[in-house]
Length: 275
Ligand code: A2P
Image (cartoon, helix red, strand yellow):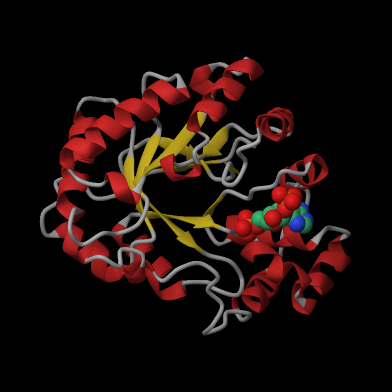
C-alpha cells in the first residue's frame, strides 16, 4: 500500500493506514499488526487515549519493518492538553512507541481552555524535529479559523469522522481550500453503512465486499483512510482494494447517502463539557 499524499509541509503520508483503536489485548494486537504488515500496511494510527502506544511500539519492533518505512500517528489526550503537559506527554509517547520521532501528532479533540497552549507545544516539538508533522482531529471550520489567528504553522491534517452516512462535504471542501488533508476515522461507519443497499449493489457488481467499496470511495474522494479491524481475514480484505475503480457515478451515488443524523461519534464542541 504505497500510495502517499504530500502534506502541506512536504511530508509524504500513506493514504491508506491501519487504525489501532480498541486493540488493547496483546495477543490480538500481535496478530493484527503482523497481518497488517503482511498485507502491506506501513501507516499506523494510535492515540494516548487508546492506551496501546507501548504495545504498538513493541509489536512494530517485532515485525522488523525498518523504521523509515513506517508512518506513525498519535494524538494528545484531552486530559493532557496545555503547554507543559503536552511536551511531557509527547516525550512519553516517543518512549512508549520506541521511536526518536513521531511522524504525525494530532490534537485529539478541540478544547477551549488549552487550545493555543497545546498548539504552541506542537509547534515547539515540530521545530525541534521530534515530530515530522502536526495536525488536529475533530476540528470544524470555526476551530480552524480560531487557530489561524495565532498559529505560526497551520495543521497538516484534520482527522474526522467521515463515512458515507456522514460525508462532511462542507468541512472537507474547506480543508481542501486551506491545504489541510482530510483523514477519516471510523471510515466504515462502525458497521452501520456496511449493510446499505446502494453499497451492497455496487459491491456485488465488482465481486467485492461493502467494506472494500467504502474504502475505495474514501481513496477516490482524496481522503486518507485508516480502517480498523481485529479480524485477520478482514485486515487482508481491507488492504485488497487496488484491483477495481469506482465510476464517477458510483462515487456520487455514495456521496448521496449522507444523512443529517449520520454521525456516530460525539459532537466536537460537546467533548470538553467543563469549559
Ligand atoms: P472487527 O474488528 O471485529 O473485525 P470503523 O472503523 O468504521 O469504526 O469500523 C470498525 C468496525 O468494523 C470494527 O468493529 C470491525 O470489526 C469492523 N470491520 C472492519 N473491517 C470490516 C470488514 N471488511 N467487513 C466487516 N466488518 C469490518
